[in-house]
Image (cartoon, rainbow over all chains, first blue to last red; front, top):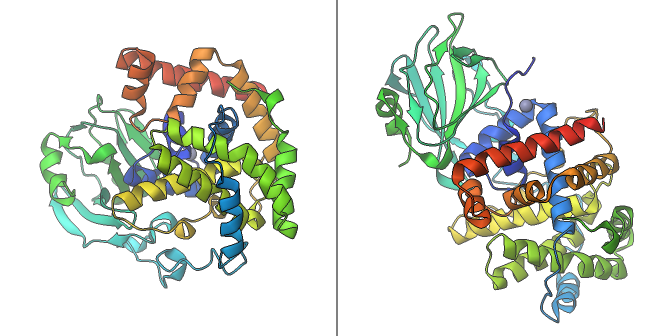
Length: 228
Length: 189
Ligand SMILES: [Zn+2]
């Protein structure tokens, strides 16, 4: 699988800095899961974070901070982490049994397996949509969309950045052709009209920065699925 | 932006964490604490946290360094980078608790789990040296733009007000600074 479309450096930097909102963060995490090149970029930006931390002018901590830390270490129930710790993640993927299936037998990607998947509902224009609920932010809007082969979505813009990761199938717009593993990042200023390629349905994961509105007729289509 | 002379060498900080992992070395922890706790606090204050919370997260980060020391792998990330990522996750966790959502830090998958076995990793020491050289190659303003990206959620608009620049100008300057950083990193390959 050749990945042709990647998140921008700005987005990867914000992800590494912990500054991307939960829903766009999950779209990026899903991309990273399949993209070694972007994982390496994130490591580079984390190293930038390490350098920024090292370069801070120290601000004195309270006088007894170290003594308090040492006392907490002595009193701590766990002491240093053992193999037990870190494997006890009841709320997260590892504890689940079978990962939920998407339509057409697609498996929900690992970075989304702790999300609750809403029912698939028809939204018109050949689109079915399912809302994912994030444990870390139940109000965040993260959508799975399944668009029928050959369907042309209404031309639309949005009031913030739109992040879309292709899980299966493919679509094209004026800016390129997007295939599984690709991530598209559409700026607010951009209007685009995606057309799903005719050879099969396209399943993608979509988040809008800040959960802001789509504009145009796709807005009315998608709006009921967003928690606004 | 970076004053390498004033800080212990990365490898020395790495060794302190490895000593905690190997023998629960409290002396090593005290050294690490003296270096990182005041920098973590400064970093969190600059991120807009109130002083009480900044103190608390700096403390929590250092306690996590103690607890998780056995997970530290200097071939994946240097000490400062590893501690930065712990602090980043605890800060996110703290903000969630403030919103009434509890997801324990232990439940946040370690970044390390992302990489399948056998992935060709650049050696961390090499990556970090390259990053620091590249950062020093940025202009003062470009370095400031990159640094501010770590402190502000609404990156562009807040950077704009902080640098006293129009929003559109900042957007293009962030892009330019990151392009420059990428060029400087690529040149070292
Ligand atoms: Zn990528």
